[in-house]
Image 1 (cartoon, rainbow, N blue to C red):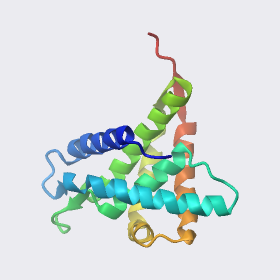
Image 2: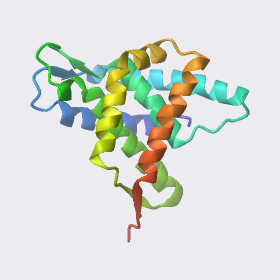
Image 3: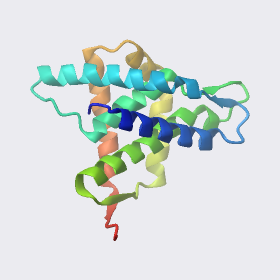
Image 4: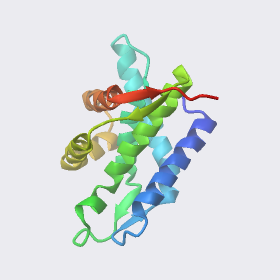
Length: 180
């Protein structure tokens, strides 16, 4: 997906809103607004590397699930929400960037879906799904950050894996018609 200025502004606003809510009243984490341009730059690099890989394999369309996967890696790479005191930080504080990627991905999927079908999605993903996503990302965060930092064609498997997680999130949702 080419990221237009309008998309970029909307994504930055969503990241800002979600990050502000997640870090509100938390003392051991800090939200870095100044890293938002780096998130967009990282996203573009990851997206372009993925697209090059896909073109070599006969595919060229980056769907909404792959956009979410690339944005997840970009956020983890740039560490938008940083732990200020790792010894005192709770598991929830340590997982703030992961929560950010999860919530942001739902918003991206909703926006794409609405633009495509003019139907709103309501996510019905069970709570256990979020917990498992959180554990998966948390336990592999260093690997995911290194993949995003040194992008190679091999990391495309990780992106495809993440995109399938976001596909399943969408699969566990319900369409809602918005009446004018």
